[in-house]
Length: 250
Image 1 (cartoon, rainbow, N blue to C red):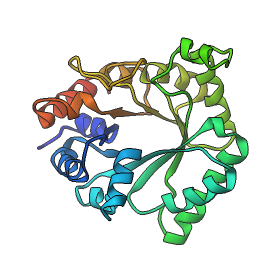
Image 2: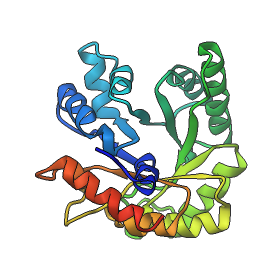
Image 3: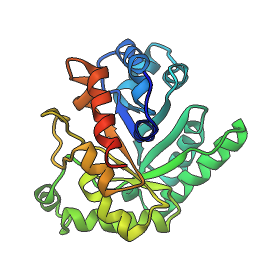
Image 4: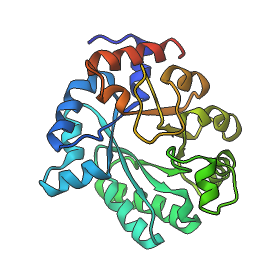
């Protein structure tokens, strides 16, 4: 597949969520879709499944030509997150995430751990990004939890803290990234789930946006796309269709 310059730029901003039943499903999908996808998201399901069968999923994805977004959403004591970050900084991991809600000490220890792990392996440090508020939540969910804050306000506050505490970017809904970029700058990375296309979207998502609108709004975002591609009848054709739509806005 020969991509135009704009389509190649779009490819670098597409992260495919490999939330699939088996490790083999994930590897097959990575091999098939690498021409259209720059990064593959390895979440808790796939990471655990791969460990159970002794597969180095990050290395295997790398053989297909893609980087990994290690989506484990670390949230624990500062020292535990520090140790987990050290072992997350391995070849092939472009970015991994933590919960901003874990606090300043935890966020700073995550970056420290990433630096030390990368130095020990003589690789570039992966980006460390902070989850602001899950895209499966909305104002009512936060009210039920007794947080006393609106969804958008909490996203904004946690973005501010993530930048202050030295993280490289955040995870936020795609429909929020443009406004955040205007306020917090394009030198920050905005990783955006909640992407829908052709009527397909992730189960349980409440904050949704299309990929063409997402890249038009935010110039420094990485789009996490799952069901819109993985549940399509022709996955590769759909992925390329999304690239073309994104390319028109770049």
